[in-house]
Length: 386
Image 1 (tube, rainbow, N blue to C red):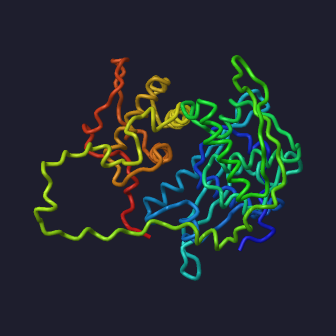
Image 2 (tube, rainbow, N blue to C red):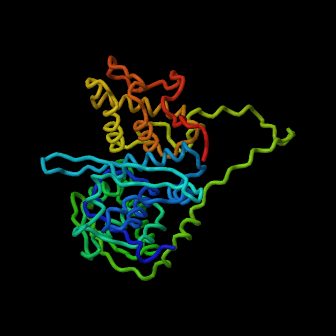
Image 3 (spheres, one colour):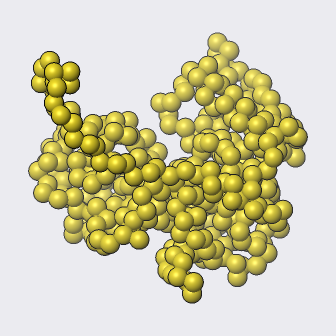
């Protein structure tokens, strides 16, 4: 079960980093990692999990090498950008290595290690950090809720905390085109988190309008943070693991004998190919990938493009859109998160296998993905399953 010593210690600096684009599962995993290390002993930097626990924490349905690698790619490509003393930026990964192996009892184990440059953000914190008990992170149902919890937990000692709407949206990583109306932002974010905290965490809050602009537009929000004693009982570890139900394999459909009752009146229309293959995606680059996510992916892609003249923002975006379109029709299974998938593709792809882009037609915006025989990287190098 989750013991009292399962405490998350988190640097304020690390907590204030924008645009890490972690999913709920990745954020929850990171909180569990922080609770499992001893923040006073760097020697505890490597943390191991039974593969079955890792599967449930990361929300992996059918466990095979492809799905395992996709989850690992998502963790290993989380980048930290920090100002350095030379007026620039230092960029590095949070985690540097994940190993999968069988232990002496023949149990599959997943072991993860932090990046060397991330260690000062994780260990021997002397000031400017906050703590919370891990159980608070386990019942929250969205990345927004967990980010909001950590933000208010960091400022809990102030009791009253003011932040601009724009800063809060950036911190919560809300896409620029979502919840633009104040009513929607309050309902889907502020009120939703408020209700979740009162039921599931050790803090609660109220909020009010802060500074206003033209026509009464809210510019800042003032949070009042309180201790919460009416939450549910803290969740034990096994209770959390058991609660993470995974999709069960579906039985193959049974053949039916045609009758006059099940013969359609007219021939049904064939479904659109992309909608059929990718039910979780819109099929449109601009809807599935926000501008911030696009910039992150293009930055990663720039390290793979061998020719300097092709590393312009316009050509990187073209190449990214082409990879996106290839992904839509070539992935063997439905993709739930286009960004995580493309990050894995970019990390693993060999530069010489990058699809070419046209540099002549500057107005070209569409790509015919069907012209490519195979997807350049679909995580199919290992065929066996765990």
